[in-house]
Length: 187
Image 1 (cartoon, helix red, strand yellow):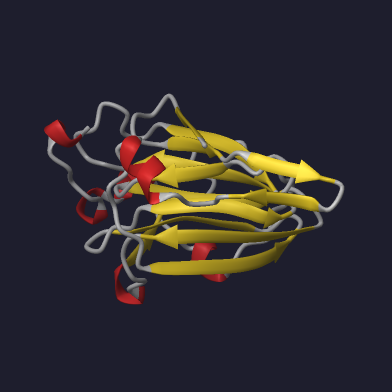
Image 2 (image 1 turned 90 degrees about the horizontal axis):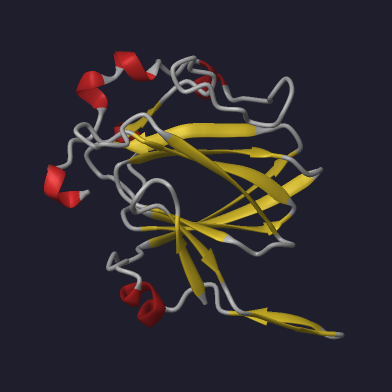
């Protein structure tokens, strides 16, 4: 397993060792020892699985009082995965990265607590799995409007398919009270 840093400290790309032959492949999608060695000490409490069709955009979501770290992977198809730093006081606040993850490249993304997350589906169908470090609390779910001009994210889809909830999310600049705060020594 190879774990690479990104331009936003703490957000990591996980490249598992893949053993392929004419029968198929095998990989370890999670290895606690490897993650601990990379500094990921969080414990996972829930696994989520979603399926979406081409052009679907989900996000940008986060939980304020029960923040979730997420280990994300696409098990079918291809998605553009987007991570936005929303930690007040962070030197990379408001910065984002996007990574194409797919069933072909088998990359995974580690999203620490304090980040908003979303994805758009680039293939005809995509199945998306992610482990989280806290339970889902619907009353605590927050989000940022997908096309916030301050972020200017290129989602790589035209006319995205969105839930009404995601269409009604606020802009980042309007979320001061709903953003998580992290001490500077945690960056």
